[in-house]
Image 1: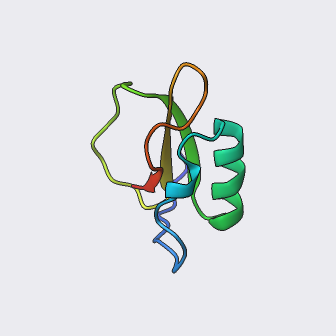
Image 2: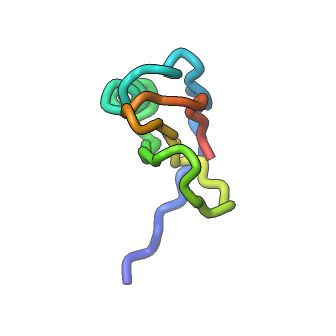
Length: 75
């Protein structure tokens, strides 16, 4: 079994308020450009999620029209 690599936050951004209302594909690209050390995850708003915090994850919550509806943040 491969060991999971723990990545600590870089000195980069930890939230992207400018991405609210944009398409998810644009948000993913933007976040990957700003922080190549994090993994963006697109989820439908209201989806159940785990409560664990991961500094290398950014959840992007979208509506049925694939528009970001919450500020994406690391964790």
